[in-house]
Length: 255
Image (tube, rainbow, N blue to C red; front, top):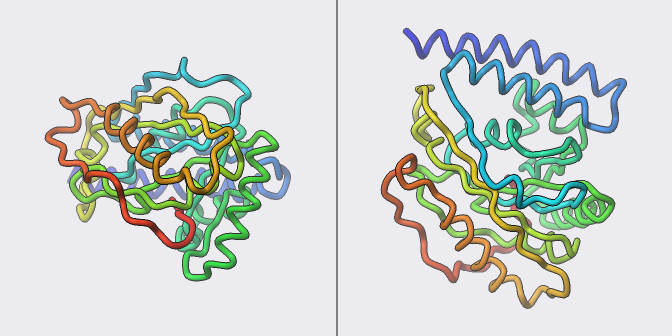
């Protein structure tokens, strides 16, 4: 019964805040309004479901510096953890096109100029990532899940290459972030929404200045290791991360 109530509240909150986000698209093309909406949406859901989100390492991030944020992905709650804790209001998600079909949430992604990647059309995906690099250089951070999809049991999977091409092209640091405990809140393949603690640790940024495309594999290993080191073992449970080097991925990555 508790899960039914939580899903009902989630639906109501999404209808309300999603409608506000869509309306804001008419008057606020900066995208900052939808970030304010997202944080309120997350706050309401967390309060109703007994989810606590804690952040560490924010002191590692330099105010005003754009980053390519990269984090592990194991639960729908990961998005909430990022929205609730990432500093500033000039950032966007890199998301696969299929997410824009989700009512309200997906519409807000598209209307507020998040980076949408069509993975079925490599030429369009490459153009999207080039535009994203230009936006990063102008001061907008982006958030990428380099695994490309959620991990079913919380292990850190192999990374795709698109985000690393983007960071090298933009010549901005990669900010690794590690989320622990979220796969216990909403396990992949389950309809449960549990209560509990989720922790996100922002690690020290990894520079890309001077790197070229030939450096992407070494950069990928470095980021993979940095995210793996950030796990809270008590929250996360046993881990069996995939070993690097990881196979080359053809085409850009999306969240």
